[in-house]
Length: 507
Image (cartoon, rainbow, N blue to C red; front, side, top):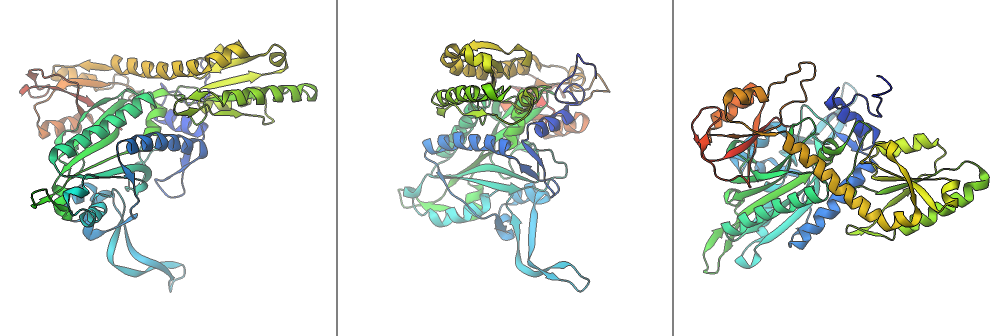
């Protein structure tokens, strides 16, 4: 690679986008592959991101009346079989426990023993086991609405895995609620999607398109699935959180009934909704560059790192003292729902090595302070949303008075940049020829980066969906909420259509 194009991450996004993604995660110490195939170990910097996501969302959930619960990891197979579509949707992904212990075998080593009377499914989602509890907890309309959420891990046995985006085990939250009326349950479904969209756009700085899924793309057993889709830098879509209106299907399967105000027995109306650690992967792919991870300040584990330049023992004490006092002042500044988090890196490493460590970790702002800066009551400021060479001096007073504004400017700037990218690669398409051309790679050597979001008419046919998926590996990602009614013709069949939908290749 030439000196001109040298970057911290190799390969670059243009050279090999999938491998670039893996290398950004590795360089930022977010996670690594576990000894168990398809699973991951989330490292401290990566888990701190998840903790910040948890804290933000948990606060929003509790503001709307939801209470946290916890249910078992193991679900009896008979529970899972109560809702037919649910079984069909998850059967191929289920991990199953059939034995209770290991015993020494006659051939040496250990072998399964103690076969269970009933196999246990390792939780892929919890509708069925939570439904069994709801059936016991709910007796009267006075018990409704019942609003619960759990933070947990789930297992879905994946064949092709990728850190954060798709692993056999992952972390998530799953909300489960029961209501007296269809209208209340549908309002809950929409409310939770709004909470997700607000979180992703305002905390993660990721612009999204909210809407609903087609019937073939819905959660197994759901009457309606609401979701939001984001565009990655290779122009593929990534599904974010989902919010499901389950109607009365799961209530009937689990016998969740209540006595209404007139003394009549009714089935409850239920919902479920969730987001996962996949959102960390989305954030990596939307914002990061060829120098590594880029983090929006509001979600970053720390917003600032101070890098003391310790040249000799004679000036070391005054530099460290200056840095400590600056750190204390910064940590007293309000930011978001709390205060600024500030790191100070005093490791015995070369300055350039330390600087690039933090650039690759995506920290929003880095401050270099040496003896001359102390003497002039100043510091050198760098921002992760700019070229590392653009860092420059600021007086301490000026920096302290503007640091929060600078971080908010970065937050908004990341969103605006991602929004502009999304808009640039979202096109309206009206002919089949143009549609197929849009999703066909022009450069066979770099087939990953092409296409984008196609806004096109669709006749509502599952057969059309299947044809496009087979021909192009393209699916209908979402039927947008903000899409106005528009008479048109299906881009594939020419049959009448009343609305455009979003087609894209997806993770």
